[in-house]
Image (cartoon, rainbow, N blue to C red):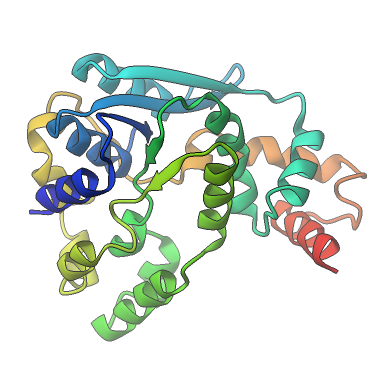
Length: 267
């Protein structure tokens, strides 16, 4: 079962009795926190929401923390410093893509508050499952094509989101723990499974069943939604379209603004 694999990896990579988990209300990070909890680790859950805009993820993380006795840490992201923060994301953290800007916006406010040495998260689960619409349309079949798409991601040792997470970990002297990513045991578990097997029935059924004793205590757990979308960070960043200093080329899409800034910083 996948739960035993995740427990084994955490036990191997986290010698301390304390662990921080970047926790959302989704299956991925909840399974990591539950695995650490089973090992007897003292779990500190870190989550966020925009100022004045409580999210499902933050509320579910709080609910799970209360149920299992985890220390709950909420970061409220400011919305009135967006221009300054965007420039910082572009210059200091070398953000390139829209999702990287939006995710790192949350991380850069969370990491300074983390007290534990080891920081775990559920990164990689969506890749194994092929959760995105893009994969469902273009890469789910045949299995060889699906495998090639997954392999391409994990062969890239430092995808953009991982680059910024590593930078933040180094800046704040943390050890990043990714039980679902770049782990041979996890690869051996997921590669034999095709897209239809993984996505048949309930969302992420295999993981849900493996952690059923814990998950049934905090149901319902919603289906996959990208972290930044669930917190409405994407809506916040839409405001940059009307800022001529940031949107210096008059773009109509935030993704193009992000690309312009990355190109400007690397030229």
